[in-house]
Length: 380
Image (cartoon, rainbow, N blue to C red; front, side, top):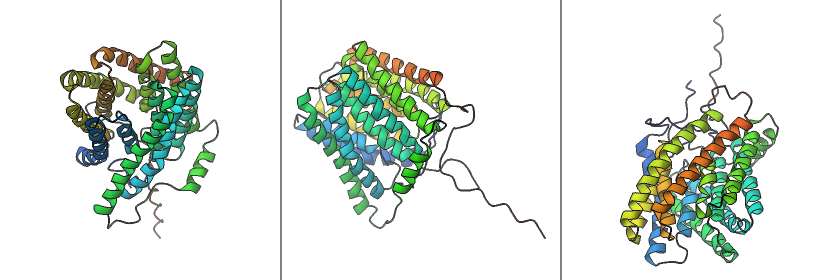
């Protein structure tokens, strides 16, 4: 029986533990067609939020759309019904993380501590499944972005509200898809089992577990990334350091190193594309909203097709959204490149300083696989 990775996005049952990124100039593990269609669907509520926020010059300035973007990642491999449930569950967590990000950003030690704890918990979620890990990474990303904006404490409650609303908009869209398109489908697996989750967390709570080591390593690396940009005073560009760390670090050293190379290539491409677009159509809100929506759809669709292109797409989204807040894209491109380079360096050093025993083995893809065929009975 085949032991290869499950087809499609991660796997609809939500039981996959690992996902191997393809090398540069290669495609996989997902087929581009279905993955890009799924990405386009997930991007629809983001586009709606952007059109409303930009079209009516809303004071939220893209905060609702960002909440919808972050909520689009959890369970993006699932059918619409379970996806809606996961997105509804992550929506309040995104809002709380955004509020905590603003609160903790008022003090450098608090920012470092909050990022370290949340990052460690997110990394430890790999003990259960890739789906739960992405839930945790989305929450950590909300904290990171909010910290990097250096907003006043008066924005804490709005961040809590708008982040949650954005996530619920994404969940509502998935629910509509389930009712209208998938209404005949019932009983799709959610990938959530409270008893199995508790057992997995307990089983991995020991120093020999690569998942516990990854959680601690990830939290420490993210905390170091925040500390570095606070120390060197990178202002609103500093969160690119922990952003890079969050996107590339995985429990396996080889997979992390592969993503480091892909991240570097994708970021360079994304910065070039985003800067050119910002300089061309940056003053036209409607055009920017369209480009942001397309960038989000490509990011969701390309995540499991080609990681470097996913990085280019999400970089384009973040750069253009930041540009709409009044930050010249051309002037900021160099600082973002520096932040990416520093993040890559920290992620690399994290494995050099504290490697996981046995990482020379092949750990390319660790999904829940069917048991091997039983041995045949000897002929009588």
